[in-house]
Length: 187
Image (cartoon, rainbow, N blue to C red):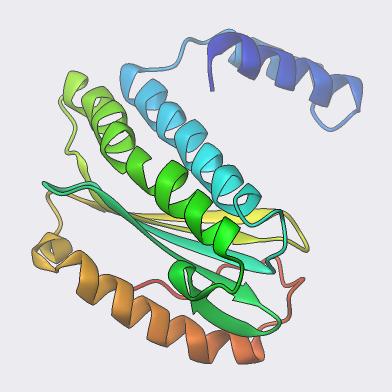
């Protein structure tokens, strides 16, 4: 979050009595370059989630996105609909499938480059994989990052996607739609 966003958010919290006025001073502190890179990633992650859900005309209970930011960037997307987990290409509506395939999936390379360029600029390891979760009922979203210096970077995107899909298929059976809690990651 940029300086002005942080500052105005803190002012709003003080006005709502959610924060003490003495906390305003901390809002004047400029973020480090690494904080700025992380904030940029969070903005991009939120945009990916919004676009992934909007592509379905907001008809999903949950959305899950694996982003491969390696040499061959890609999005692996699954949705929970009516209590079942489906991969994006298994959806029934051909218009939605077309929208995902032609508008959303091609953005993976640009996302990978934009995000990882920020981390490169601050001499931080790049993101190899990121997993995103979104729950419609609560609006909660969660992110899990596998950095390039992590042992799990040797995994293939297809393996992560497959294992995560299998894990989530079982887990969603027991997790209420308004849980406001993250589900499992893989690995």
